[in-house]
Image (tube, one colour):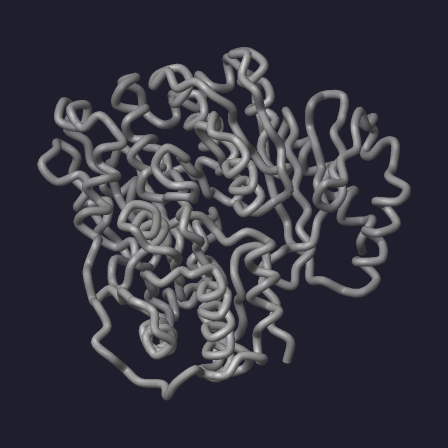
Length: 460
């Protein structure tokens, strides 16, 4: 089989394509690329998925046998921790064994370069070119692997990214759902010695993730929403399987979509923290960001979907203060050039406590200032005729849809139609799953549903 990396790493079904043999091939190729760059120190992390620790130990053993200095933590860790350790503890690269938010049958291999972020397309291409072509330099042996645990250091570093005094002024209860993933306990530990009580659900390892995908989206948030209501909590925080994404539940038990979370975080950094610099968003992210940027005179840069594209901007620009995407992944370059679910959660709580407002009140204030926005994404299975249809639309895009006139067409990732009311529709193939994704954001909920219905008809 041909092993190809997608939007964020190589992901495949366990025992079908994600096997010890194939993982070993990828690790050997990765080691070869690092060796050619004279790089020697590697940090290898893993999440709570089925066999993740075993796959990670296999990768660590290969790197050790190839002459690398390897650190394999004694427990499952989050992807942001791996990024932080690589950047701040002197590693030349990193590996994270995870399939992030994919269903339980998947696992994956993420590569971090020495700057702490996802590997560049050039680096990935080089790794792919060596897969299956590199033989072990010596016998595969399990040597004296270092097992240093950076969890406490990482959590303390995240705590330093917010004003902890604010968390000591008001008594609130927060419900945290790590979705059986490796971020279990992180939020609770980050908020120790404050007046914030963290109540946890699904905070233990279950490789089947309760029979669902560990993705922080509304359809998987029902139990968290119910728990917030039952506990009378201030809000709920949800992280995906490897802890780099976040979702927010307000005090009423309602799901706050990721687009609104992006806008809230953006405003917090610019207005409350007084950070100066550019903002990066993917093509699937809210028009509220455009309105905020225009209002505050801030440069807004748009990229294709996938945080690796945001990373590309971060490598070129030192003035970027925030980047994020529709999937609930938000990054703070001053910390690491990668998404961080824990730091995102603490910044949200800091915003609410600083303003002395509930999440729903903050959303309402956002709408009053910049207009309402209703967002939804639907996924269709990939079929050859749907792929061809998308190619046709990209070549000859419609001038109107659902009675709305198209103001602008963007093709940096699939097809994006921007309408005269600022609303938009994006159609693109997923980079991590065999799906065709249709995204839509409109100033009215009914209008959004009508446009999505029209778009679905085009691909029926």
